[in-house]
Image (cartoon, rainbow, N blue to C red; front, side, top):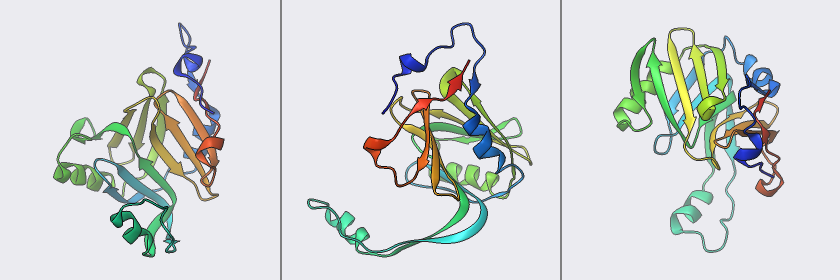
Amino acid sequence: MTLSHRECDHSRGFQMRSDPTFERSFRRLYGKPCWNARRGHGSFLTLEFGAPRLEIREPRKASPGSSRIVRKNFARRLVTLRGDWHLWIYCADWTVYDKRQRVADSDASKTKIDEAAGLLDGQALTEANFQYRGCRSVFSFDLGGRLVVTPNEPSDEAWMLFEPDGKVLALKGDKTFNHQSKNTPRDCEVWRCAWLQ
């Protein structure tokens, strides 16, 4: 269930604060260095936090009508090194800063995106700030790195934080969030207003 942007747009003249779920989830990351920060598909970014562990997806059958490439990939075992926490910057515009200097953004070349990910790699998260205006998320790091994320589309997740307990905290561009098991079917997800008065 998704609320419309209009249902969550109750900020006229009020100071908005993010739902306490955001602070509860992210404060457990404060002081932890991110590692294996890297560019994913296109301009997606992924950052790992906490102890490393192997995530193994066993081979499985692709759904009927899947492309040859999908069938081939599903037939393989996929082994990925993940942290206890995995932050995936997904359908979003983002910019990485080194102190006040802009390093790269989501429209940059692959080389510049890799440079931006490399800058964040090894820096410890010190603050996560969620701003109602523009549905902007700002992730600050101890050595001057800063990652500013703004959703692309109202219906898309700007980012997802995969947590050690199997839950995922996700923020959409329509200013809604959910915090549920990563195994929750899409049609059973519950999306709530991310900001409170």
